[in-house]
Length: 85
Image (cartoon, one colour):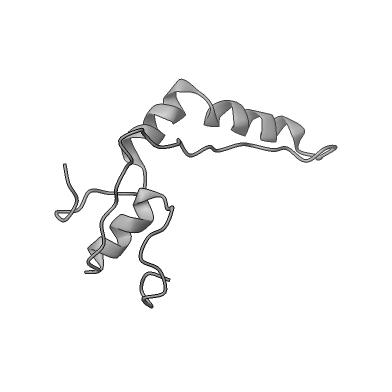
């Protein structure tokens, strides 16, 4: 919608904004002075899955300190020269 000029403001994750900035679009990301919400991720295992053990191992890894640390430091929103520091 931003690319087509159909929106001038929107609620969006910053990573999508930075992708547009990296592509040359004159757009900015702003956080209200009151703060912003945190994106949530949830994991769900299908009832009676034949791979319950593997699913539980994955969820336990995904919520581990190790995995959370990697997620917090290497998200797919890599820095750009156009981004504020």
